[in-house]
Length: 86
Image (tube, rainbow, N blue to C red):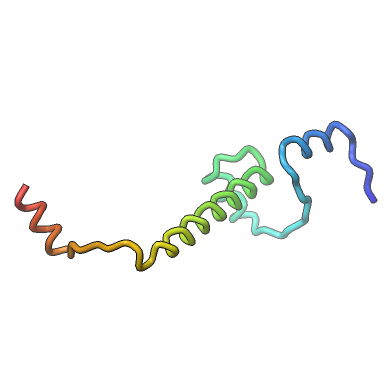
């Protein structure tokens, strides 16, 4: 068992529960990830990417749950007619 410095442990504990792991990521992909997430370091970039992925996955799941529950009567032709008549 590793001993963790108490201040570091307190920071992790109060900020969030974190799991440390080692992964292999292509250097160019990591650079692109840091660029697009505007992260200051690799850990923040990966954390933001995971948060975004999970958020989008939940949104997809929520949308799929609405399948068959939403009745849209207008077709694209009806919508076009509405736009023209405005």
